Image (cartoon, rainbow, N blue to C red; front, side, top):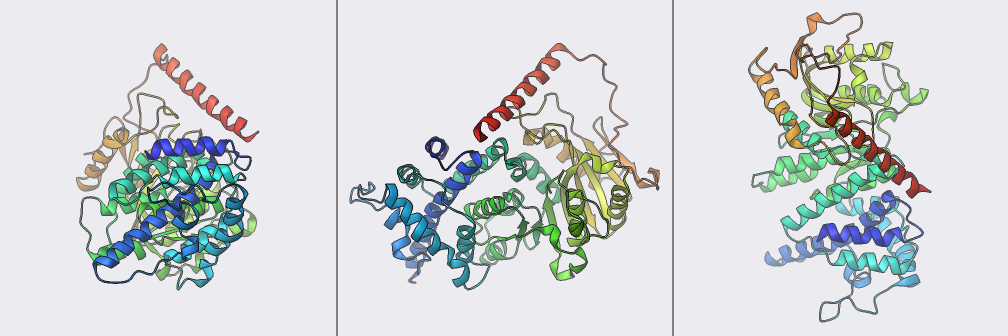
Length: 490
């Protein structure tokens, strides 16, 4: 039901003059979906209060509740045909509803409340749907959805993730917001956070790491009241620079079940890392910082190792922000391992001396759909220097792309061997795709950590015809996706 509804809404928004791309579809679907979800959440809370003999005070005033303006119902359960539509609906949303919701940011008791988050969301958003008749259709579709049971909420959040994923094919840097969920789940399984840990992503994007960490910590267990409150209030922290990503990430976490996520709209790199104190540090860091960006000289002044490379600045921030004994899983360009500029050499030296870089996962090209850059995942603990690094090179029998994305089964061998590497000592987890590097064997002048697999069998110089055809097909699909994105923007 959710999947078809989202498709129908995209078709409606595609016809609207105010929505030009998948990014707009996601943004506009999000705020309407959020208000419907909020209405169901309020009803659940009212029911729970009634069962305990308490009185629930709604967050939203009667005139602005979903059932008043969006979906007033007749006795038969159908939406009243007199419900606002056309110009009347657009005027209500733009002139009354958004300003009302925006003011929650100033009237909320504190920043860690859902009221404050509502205010933040609607301070950043604007209604882009120009036709009130299109907006009425969108509202009617979303009103059909229910978020009352755990299964319904799980299905909805899963499909919302799919919509965020599609932003990566929509131009305007949408791909920055999305990291493949199988990779996120694998990183979390290796880092293995526990309830009570403070978990941080300083480049939160659509909050995929934080959402999946929340699901990981809840999985297969009945939470006590104290554990639930810990997860709600004192576990997940994030920062995000871009406005749309911040809004999508905040709503994504709320839709996953974290009512007042601690995500801040700020430029993480504008903070001087010399100012980070013990109270500012985290037990777990999970992140995929943007790569390829260039930061201005004044931003570089916030870091001891000066570089314009965004990801390198983020890595310095993460090392400083990690508690002693803390654990991290960070995605970065694979050129980090071998770049010969002074900043890269100094950063590798810093990482190896301050942290135990125990595992490097070398990912194939195409892991990030639409991005040709190759990446690695760095797994490290803070508090003792690196002695040995276990490398795993993910070699797949197929080319990754939009129609052949990375999946959890692709990473199963890595997860299994990585556990052996950490618990059973040298050589046990070495294989055709994995090997151990002793830090004593690296060049102390360059700290080169290039992922050169000594165990990989020599390959035939000539590829098989089916391999060439498969690569040609994948390249054609990537080219078509780019062309579609370009056409949407014209």
